[in-house]
Length: 154
Image 1 (cartoon, rainbow, N blue to C red):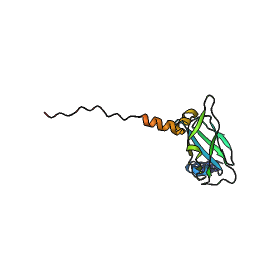
Image 2 (image 1 turned 180 degrees about the vertical axis):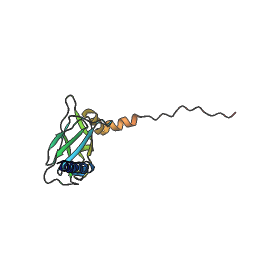
Image 3 (image 1 turned 135 degrees about the vertical axis):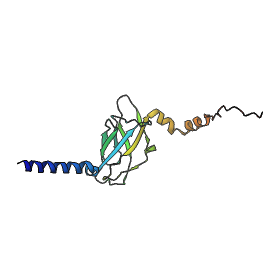
Image 4 (image 1 turned 90 degrees about the vertical axis):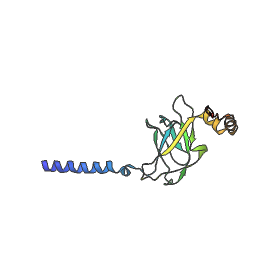
């Protein structure tokens, strides 16, 4: 009896070790993992993000990660567009990266890579997209020379 118990525990240990040592075993086909953060790199919690093409949407967790189910025809390296479906309460966010609806490639389902998404306040994002405002702000920036005392010859 003790030998059977020891063998069963050994098998459980080996299977658990293989699962922990091989994250690829946890990868799911047809799932796009995205990591959503603000411009400072802080995770955005509670944002519902999805793909515009055939597929679903998911809510970001406390790490800013969401697992979006893709359509059955979407394969690795396919290009997909992301969209915000719902913002966390009290926020009005827009996608800053990928910029202007740029499509992102779906990473290999066998990897643990995620698509990085940066979101920011929609008003700030609109100002960045307005080229007139961007050019005006850039033109008003003046580069100041540091106050360095002049050397005198004595």
